[in-house]
Length: 190
Image (cartoon, rainbow, N blue to C red; front, side):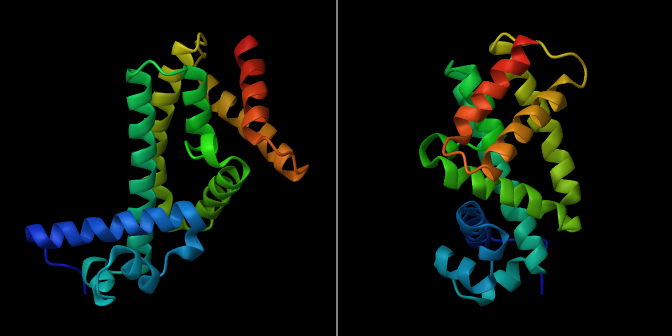
């Protein structure tokens, strides 16, 4: 049963705890890590809370993916405002911010999540909405890095970097962020 339309402050906090826990599990272990019991345990709430606040596991997964992506976008915006290296922010957007510190494992988890999203049609709407924000922020970061992509150029840069990183992953390259940096430099030089 889904939660009533109007929630109490405690209910909103509990729902937020569940979303945060599910987002953490998604980032750490992919879609398979999000299970009612695991989310409830991570959030420190009763198991029944997951089905009270979310009508299905799909709803919980959608909320987790949305939360994780919004947090990553917010981090990238904050770094842009702080005038961090725009090329590194572009790499954060394309490979995930955890790739700075966790390297290969973080990149593998991110690509698995992206590919896994395609197997979950219920995520299509949230992914389309996120893509608009992602492309706008990526365009801004690229501009600050000195690259002014033509219309459609942001998607081309994304495809080039993603393809280079995926090829590197297939070849067991130890530094996917380095591969992405080289591909980005190539794309910017064009």
